Image (tube, rainbow, N blue to C red; front, side, top):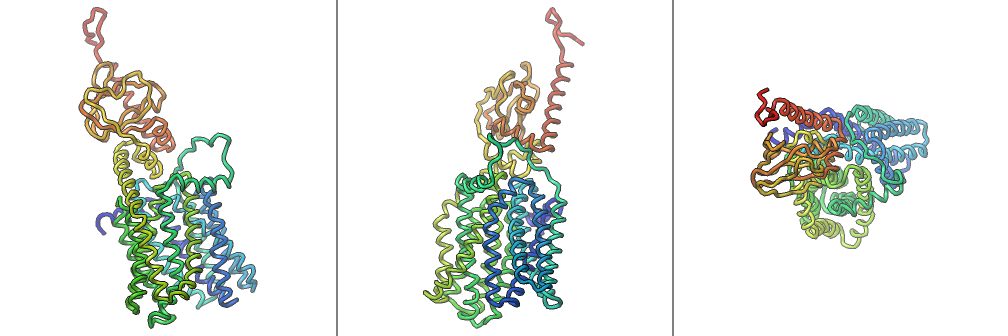
Length: 562
């Protein structure tokens, strides 16, 4: 598995935290697909089609209403702790549903299944908000999301098969017990995560805001981050069509082709295979700076096959179309979540991801509710064509915005690569290095010009992009710095005036960070703080040694030989 593929898998298998997080995700999502199958079968056996409709409602609405509040909670408490608690409560509620099923108490079963669904609803946005902290580069983050999509695809295959085996060999109660066991495993694995969160810089004036204010701040964050809002809006449009496809799949299998009712399962199996293959392929695009246009291309690919099925009916065409739609879904999933993780600051990321999940759940429900009206008005083929056209048209309308996202990501990538060349910044997690990249300013300094002088107040930290500078102490050059080297940290970290003069030896390009941003990033993590302090001590020790061995003139002006 050459190149980016090998690197992406190595980033997961070689990083203990990512290994644990992905394993926890596999257990949780295998349990979710098992849970969905068992819940539907139980409802049908107990209350028939009405029961299936009831559990569908209980699966979507309560979790959707709870998600914004759960997102706020994830931005307030350690995310690892919230993962462990939600997995533990899910294990208890799923296990309790199994006991209630054995006791013949359907009301209790439905109540516990609803609580279990709400618990799992928090898992994906919380883990998604945690992944950037566990990664050291944006490329690693995109690769991790791609690997997660592959593993989720495997969970989508294994979970229903496990449910079928347990229901056939035992009962739905046994399937609920298996869900509880998988949730417990996911929680234990999450409890093993060991990482360092940024040290808080203090609550805002007036103390911490209330929960409702935090939910509102998550909405305001999207106004402050219009590029992230673009991703959510286009993703919501895609989810409308996805909801419609849950109904249209039956229309295609029964009315438009000769696949019949069993063909519904065949179509969704093709969807799953396409997603698994495409998720594996997206690992190779982990380092791409064109995440915005790849996201748009994935959404357009969702729609075009549906138009083809509407115009050219046939079993083979239908299966191929669902294969392509599944592939497009994986591309949208990987690029969309990576974009949100990179475009939204860490302090509000969990609540934005939770709001995103809520929006997507509601739009899926909206699509499934409105498509029967479309089918009755236009017929199955017409409904497919209209639903499919919606997505390419939406992407075409927002293509310029998606290109702008690419330009933003490309600029950040170049800045992050420059910052990663600075030794004390290499260990910063993705949210911190992204934040510094956004604050980076570029300066041009003419040859012979002083960047600053000894005794000046320390205001900025600098990285050399091009050219060269000299560090001058007491009129003597003590070191030269070139591209990738940095300077200015001593005054900022020790709160003292500049200890040396830095002069451009040729026309030089510098990247500057404000002192407050630099100090906040470096001192927020123990590894970077220790590295920075080690470098500062080394510079001060060199300068002190130089002062001790430098010849000093005697009172008559002659050099002191000692």
